[in-house]
Image (tube, rainbow, N blue to C red; front, top):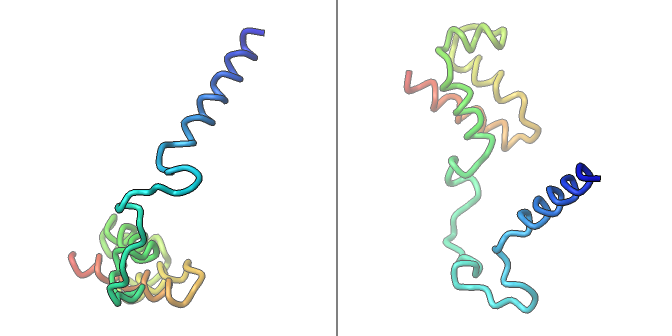
Length: 110
């Protein structure tokens, strides 16, 4: 019985912790920080750092030297071949393009 009580208590804590204090509750009352941002005419692709595919590929391609990345991916040891292989895992053409750019940017710093 003691174990069941401990499990229920832990479950309740997880449930309460997940609620967080980020909502103003019903009826709004949100602060200016939570208000919608004004349109700055910025297109989604303008900042590659805001794209998860770019960031992930940039991180992957910065972990190892080009020769090791090529070996791991089974391609020639060229920046283009490695970046293309890394980008293949993305599901959309836009994300593949961003992943290719992210990897190429990481490999330029070698």
